[in-house]
Length: 376
Image (cartoon, rainbow, N blue to C red; front, side, top):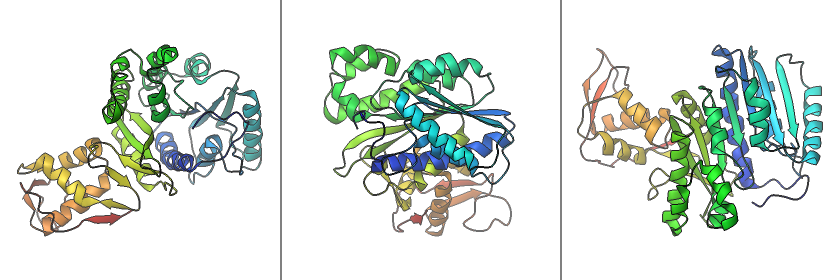
């Protein structure tokens, strides 16, 4: 989507999906960190917009604030919301929306809202936000630009805080279109944090797309120092890749919660999430999980080997598109069908359950006799 020239604009279907993911993740992120002993947590919306769309729908800043206000339990931490919007007119409209929301909400003395106007995300974060943060303050940054005016160096500063995470909209279609443009070399050096992307500009088609995606993921790990990076495709009605959502974290629990948010988000019909772990067999995110696919992946990794169930769980979380809750149904069905041997387990283990310490051996050959599907 090209950057709009008006103060507000129409809400597109793919934006609804991003917002659903954001809300679901913040619903989990806020209480986990607050009750986890952090005295202060920080949310940054790097490209906040006016807070409202043409039809009156909430923008990402209002969605984020509502996630805080809707918490059932008391949030003990101080929670700072930083909304960065370079356009003064949009920032003024955002302030009106925020003021109206807070005026109707219960008093929240530990909630602080900051609206930054007139400067871009990188400048505001590095000059105004980062210097106020101690090493132990976790940040969640939602970086959702029009185009590619973001800096890997800024992402690295956020990730360096230790318990911080980023959700980045990598605008593949626009980036791919302008990748070889001579006027954009410096901007792409900034985006990727180096010049290795230039060799990718000489590629074509799917090879170029995959190389761009994988290079950005690698930079989030090497420059951003993220331990876990997951990317999800957003495809339009023509099944063409429009953009990728990248999530980067150092905490496995963050990855678990983001996967839950991804699987539960409603793509609203116009766009479809898919996982690109294997570009030839993508997992489509919808009402059901194709657990037969997950069985093939588990067997492909562990077939014929005796392994702890916890090793399978780690594999599923770190290296597949599926949630941690999915693999248990797969193992249960495999044992029932005779495709999984339980090598060691606690006494009186119930069949189809896999307590901590259970050792299993998946069949060397995937049978595929039972279609495994799990409604979410």
